Length: 553
Image (tube, rainbow, N blue to C red; front, side, top):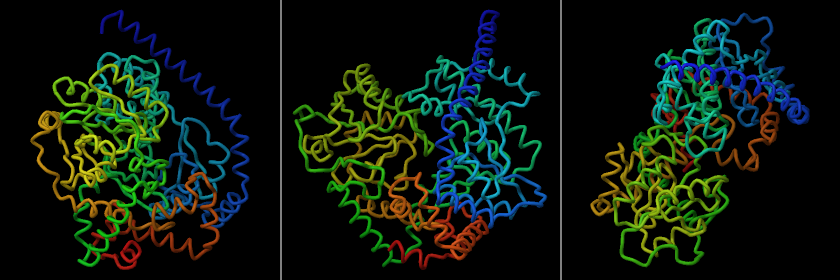
């Protein structure tokens, strides 16, 4: 790095340090305003009753703990109700203290909830004083060596990849469709990531950490801790009221997709037939225009019989539709996507469009999120062969207009559209990876070959296995649950409002018997050593299918 660049880097480093101070002050002032709401929530009648019960149940005074269970601050009632049980069973098992962390103090609601189940200590994440010189060196080194988005994504420190967490945090925090390496905001997120990395690296050296119990395993605030834990062979648990998973490496949470056929094979012939019938009935509803079938978040259907003005050219050319995703929220959630984000994915398709004589169209969800259309319009302006169609166009209408190919990164159209007659190509790892009713590109070069050779893809394979996939994805892979039998049951119970405190009523009304059952479920799962409750039930040495199978079948 020459002298001018060195001085510029030094100035930028001072700027991000000052920005961090400003953000801290702003966070504190904002917290003071929000604390009134948080205090009110903490005094909610159900919350108070739940916390009082917890305090009677989880008594930690006088216990000399030898290790830590780390938790992020995530005061969502359905998450707290489940993870308070999991964290305490782990703490008992490892003689560990439950400890939360964050960039600032806990708000009143989080403090009341976490204290109630024995999580009294809270860590403030900041680079230790003795490591601030290293933070500066790492930051300036990154400014010199990271030249592209891919460089940022692959950025590692001491063998721990932190760049992907910076990348996705930037998209999410600032609602940007792609990373902007020269942005001051992006540089600031890099600085924050170094704080997390240095803080937890030092913490793991000084202390014994038995496990982490987190709401997510991505973004700077959770992903970096997860990677440090995994590197040292420490498990990261990801649980909610209907599911528990133990992860030991990045992207393991969704490794189950590749084992779906194995799950289904554990069933007897009658169970398989019943499962396929269930999957077929559900998909017939969804493709018939029913809203929210196994998708509680959905508000509009793309499969109604509604017709609008023709959207595609009346030609015999191959017609391809790119089905967009939300650009900002964890685009690489499953791992293994071929591109660093959805903007880069569509940019690649825009370049391919210039090499083909196909007709190319872009379709968003009918209930697309804010910022989506702006990003799509920008891409269409950059690549003129990409035509944006009306989001209200149904897939049935597009099929009737001659569209035959749909492109997605990993969306649900992968199991919907083949049944309507489309060939679907995925851009990397996806929930359908174990099946052949889609095409799955394993590399950018293979993806390119598929796109340029649409004529040679051949017919859709194993179409009937769509129903098997759907049953496994929505039922078998979700077996278990110590508060609820399924995600759908949980969503219905809280009226699709994860912030609802009604979940506490479920715990309270069940009394000691409910708590004992929940603790036994957690202990059985932890004893099994299985990746998930579903795998414990389906693949474990003491298969427990019985009542669980009866529930889903």
